Image 1: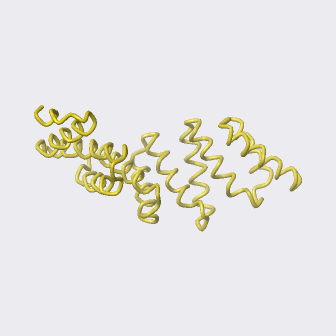
Image 2: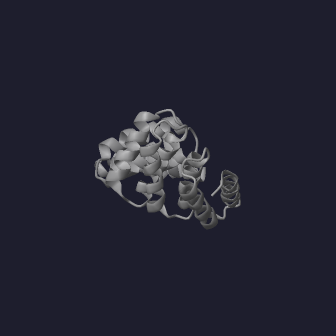
Length: 193
């Protein structure tokens, strides 16, 4: 394939991606990467390929794309995104040990990344599933502190209550559940329930 044909193939793939035609985007990105693996746009194409697979909910395939990207392109500007997405895919397919390792590695390397609060939340959920509620508590608390008044913060508060319940700290769990009920309903009477 010629360089010009490769550019056209990349444009076609990104067009499909922008129009949310995920399966067609996957097909075109794979063709582009097979034909021109060293093209200047290959790095972006790999990330877009992984994201198109995520949008198709083909998390195992997406995870492999992101893992290959991480192994091959450790100095890329897209590394943080690929690391987060690999961990997210592991989380979404319930591969808890991989999720724990990959999300921890992402948080350690990119603690201030905009995706870090979501990564901490997913890692907290993973820790809770792995019956590590003490570690989950610290992660949930960091998410609530960083996320402000957002849906993610409310999700983290709910997770924190679950972690306290697992630790048999029912008073702490109940206080959080009551706060959430009050916040979500705007009902101060929730306090009395």
